[in-house]
Length: 284
Image (cartoon, rainbow, N blue to C red; front, side, top):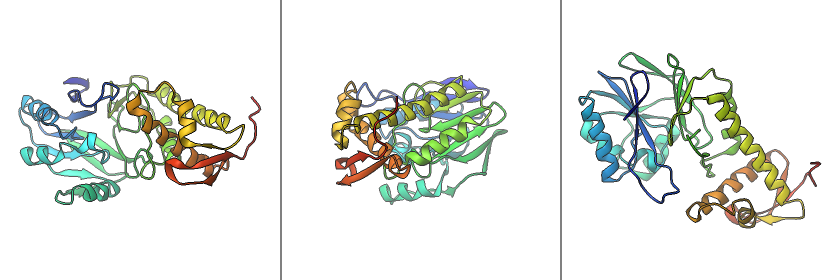
């Protein structure tokens, strides 16, 4: 465990999946009473890592397991950790609904949303609804230390993946711009190391998405193209295990660009869709 801010500890999950995957983090907030942010993977190694760290802290009462979003690399260990520690589970309504579809036998104890506060051992976390990566994605702000737990809105050493329909690029960009306006000192991401220059990281994220849309428009300058064909060009150097994620990124961008009246759907649906540009050749 690394102490990444006063009485806030990051626990990096054990290796899981292909080397190209960046493993998830969980966070312990507080000492005498703690909040646990996310719950890692469903693997025995991940669950044991979290429970061992909790016992190393003296097995303090857990105020709540705060779920940023209901993806399996963040909720996989939830049922076992909840059972072993007696901790309640809190998350956004939309994430609770998705969680219930996957695990109907499990429960969410409390619905939280924008403006709510969670206090553990004197550390007060403000709940922020930051949709985009998923529809009910939550971030948690410790105003005292200026630290934002970003889940998968921002990750430490790569870029977040947006997968429609639960992921929405329009909402995602709005959430990034909201974070850009916040006076943060540190970002504590759901994957990767802490970010000590939040302003630069958010600028990098926004610029990356803008440049990706320019790439897509360039791909369409000479006529319609399918998402797989564009992905072959744009993500030519991507690790094979991540190729499908690359296609999903292009689809997420195209759905936003269609809303922005930059592209038009010609035929097909989902990953097999064919698009054309409606803005013509770029002037640069």
